[in-house]
Length: 149
Image (tube, rainbow, N blue to C red; front, side):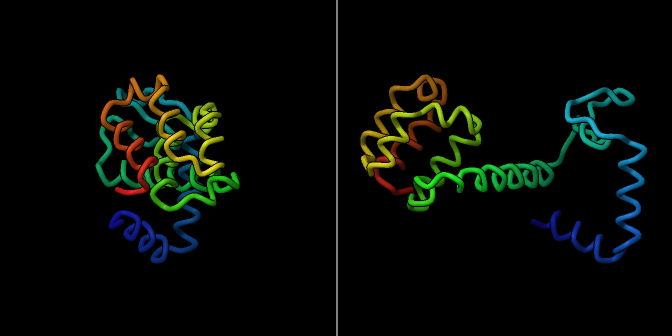
């Protein structure tokens, strides 16, 4: 959060100069959606060194990705009807599995649409995801079943 506030402060201080700086850096750095070697360091995007990112940078990226996933999930009517804890379960699974991966849980989604929470939890338990995800999966199943943290 502090990093985001700092970024907002910098943009306010430089306003149009900051916009010009961003355009100039984008022009000279170029964009890469995949990691590449840059003077012995791994970089991505517009020359962002990813060899060593701070916890604040990782947090900002996580929040950004969760916001994108949440917007996509809000397009699903069944997701919008969920109580907050169960929404978090679905968002957590979407973050881990991707949107397409989440949508492969057809029987779980059917159970959710019919408010059959034990059935949804049972579908989660019977999946390969459950066997591979350890404690994370056990907690999410409990939250789906009980609607409690």
